[in-house]
Length: 81
Image (cartoon, rainbow, N blue to C red; front, top):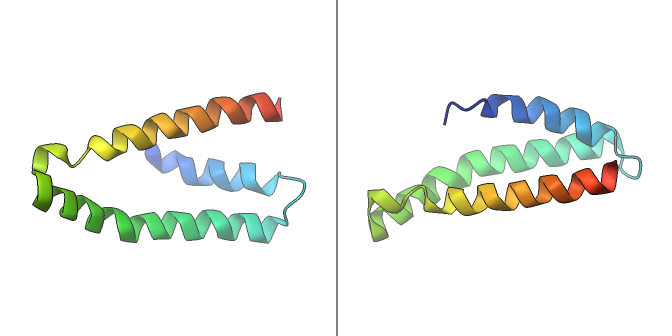
């Protein structure tokens, strides 16, 4: 990784606290639950993929997740601007 991904959580906290329809505590807890959940699920899923298909296919799902994140980013920029 090492691509500045550690900056995502503070930015996600600040963006989620500015949403009008959701309480700040609820939005920050949703971000925290999803972050901790991904830290627990991702290594097990990567190990399952490596065991089933080989180590070279471990990072293929991350490409799809990255593309989905880019789509969400561009769509949310249109909604919030």
